[in-house]
Image (cartoon, rainbow, N blue to C red; front, top):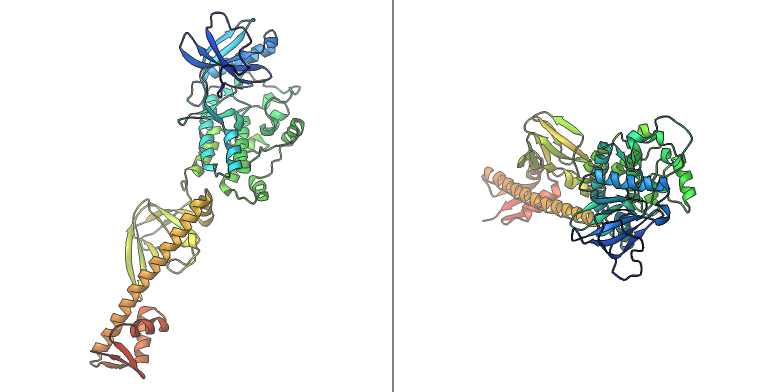
Length: 478
């Protein structure tokens, strides 16, 4: 529970507990409540600003465990000075009234955003992944300070205005140094069952480490991809039982039930993070984040191939199964025109080629040859497909653009080839010293020299101004 949301004064849920001694606050309404505490929006009269006031429930102020957990939450949150973790301003720990103040967060939870997107049919995966990357930063920072969150889930992520993103509710966070090192009696499951790791569901704190939070981050990714938590169940007990077993339906299988697809790279990232065996998970949040960022940022960190100078990377007319990005070196693109290679353009470092044929599933329209020893990143057909699946609109736009480009490219190439064939025919006729030549032998020569079909050559030559067919002879008119 955290300081989040907007409430108006006089909503009937005002501050009913006494304030800590010396605190001057004006009640602006209840923001939220939980089993241990209530959070109010108040105006701090001393500092002249609105803050969130979190107060331990009166009946718990004399319960040592509850008070200790409440104070620990405030101290841990205050010690984590990070842009994605809300600041704690003040703490009071007297028996009369235990409370702390923190930043008021205006916005929505990630859970609310995901539900709204699903309800409205909005494709928000890319935006949600960006939020998750920022939360990874917060968790990684906490780990660097020796703190485990242990309750990571979309409802504990606040997406506020102006790009502000916060990880909240550090109520069951633990300092790693204070965790038991020897196995003992299970302590019971603490956290959110539908997102917790098997070791957390079994209540085995001596097994908790950074990978316990990695599991829950994988659970958030699963929720983004599938529309439900990894162990979504009708009851908490059922969710705990599933978590103990540690068996998660792969997100692509879950999505397929709804007629949706999930990029295979995200499936692999998600399932590694959700491995029931901690040794098979990402060892750190940074490792999980790096793989996630590689996907979110697009076609980076691709498998590479090296081609020697003069070696063809793709060949005109062949089936397209991959596109390529030049990592280092130079290439040249050529096309056969009238049977001879014609240079289209040079390609430099950072340029992508071969993608249009992959998008349209058409044969290659050109040959690309390495001018120098060249290193290229290989973008296979599946990777390109995944990039297009980010949004259906982008997929449609790219495929349409690629198809239009290839159609135009072919028309221009055909027009150029037609002109060269007509020029060849004219040259052959003039070389004979006569305006009349046998058509069939000339047709065979033109087909051989141009690489075009007999029907194409016939149509181009006879369609040109000045040529007619008289019986078996081609006649050049005045």
